[in-house]
Length: 100
Image (tube, rainbow, N blue to C red; front, top):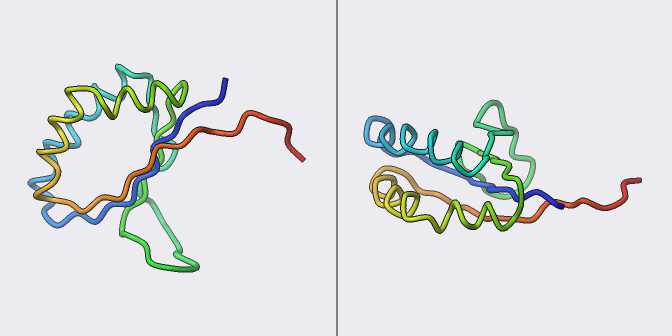
């Protein structure tokens, strides 16, 4: 079964205000089997516009990734984040087929 991924690009406007959002996510992602593959770090935007932070979170499946996003806990946490950060987020199914 292909895994599911959250791909997020984030610009934080208020670090202190953003901290409660981050603290809540730790337990929530763990509950849904999520794990960070990319969490900011060095980035080189080769083409187009990009935000200052990039996050990739892997989940056991696309359905689980959606369930985490749609959960009442995460929906409440979005409201904590919104005044403090601009976010572009997609949820995408991984590829589980043959490789070259």
